[in-house]
Length: 271
Image 1: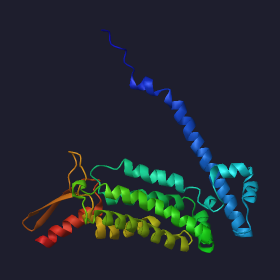
Image 2 (image 1 turned 180 degrees about the vertical axis):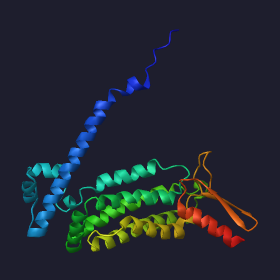
Image 3 (image 1 turned 180 degrees about the horizontal axis):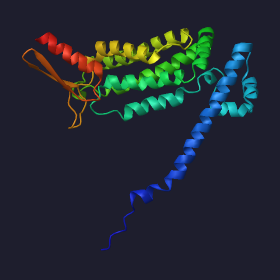
Image 4 (image 1 turned 120 degrees about the horizontal axis):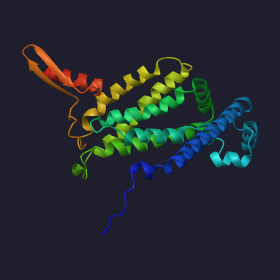
């Protein structure tokens, strides 16, 4: 029986390229319009006040029709946060492609850095947004709802890296996963608020890394028991052995530094 002709991967994927490019352009245009509407809303909220500003005025200031506004946002308070949907997608993508050997708590810390990048990309806008959310309860509630979405995403991710065979009544894994996820988000938000109160000045990346090191030290040991590692990846970030009075450590180049240091400190205490 004759065999059907095989189609090369290159040939089969070619028709998808224009569609993918078109989708990327459409997403960029969508985000551009959302940001323009958000800018118009912030200007009006600052000059007229939140309560006195209408959706029609926001749309007119942005140079679009009312129906265009509602294609992008459901309400005027939602317009003040145009980037959270896309940032949530980027954070989830970080989790989806995490290296098998990476500690899940480190992965979550990298994921939430996408949120900080969003704010740090436009410091002046972020500072003004922060001022408005402090003054307008409706905006504050919207911000809290956005934070809750990140916490749910990270909780699901951390819980998936406990030993599934050990889930039973009375097991504290779900509690630890939720508390650890909340701790990461809280640490991020603490640093973010401090940076915003300082007018968007300062090394926010270093401040964030310091806050995350505290979270890892507190919660890192109980998470990841059920993670499946690739054969090439060690189950620990560093191997330590004593040779006389010398301590020799071997670690992967991409191992988290705080994990390596903690392994060395534990080895030194044990001597």
